Image 1: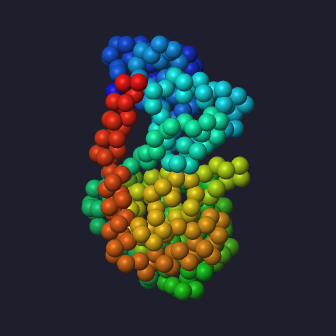
Image 2: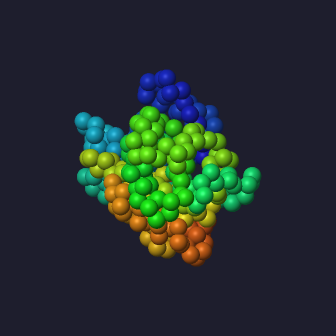
Image 3: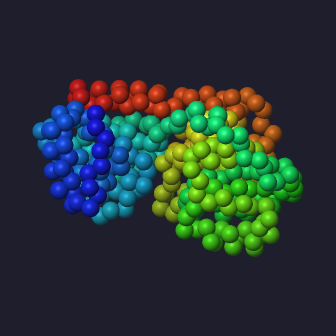
Length: 315
């Protein structure tokens, strides 16, 4: 089993030849290509009609949506899938997009990428709260699909009930300047802290110190949505009450009222209501969340991938 990057500056035929040579030299049994484009296409070309190795494609979201937009996407998808021995999708949403592109059921296994729970349960002490009633936490890229603007618009409604509550935003991206401007316009400059990009250990500290983690992701025009934000399982592993929208792969993992809270996207009132529920969540909810994270811990994910590879080898 080999995972190796092969010069992104090469054209697909050069990458395929390099993959083929590497597989032959190392006597590779299985190539697992992450993202169906371009890596899946590269490995499919290297594998050939008479397979030199088994090929398993892992789809994460953006790649499936890209295929759906490409002219000739169905033909390309069918060609890659036809030269694959197994498919893994990060969520049922991603599998559904692939099925739509193919025009038939793909049979892809649904498997989120998982989490390593340990670092989110121990380490340096949690960050102290800069706000009297603690802080909500957003972690992720600052771009439209993440829905951070909706969270900013929900915050005044939340502060009507919890006036000492603040918000910490960990991450960076193209929307940062616009979000800072929006926070000032809403009169929230003093209660929203932009922490910027942070290493994993610091993300853990921010999570463990928060009152709740909020993931306000959006479903975009045309149906595009996130496959599975990694912070979903990270927050669960940390034992933090989680609020998220019913978009993409999130409902695969989050069950409303059992291990987290779900609401409509693009709705500040619904988001504020869900956050208030999370702030009063009983300990049993965070215990259930940690149990969910344990089910998706990397050793369990590795075991499931091993089973997938074994099936691919016997096709």
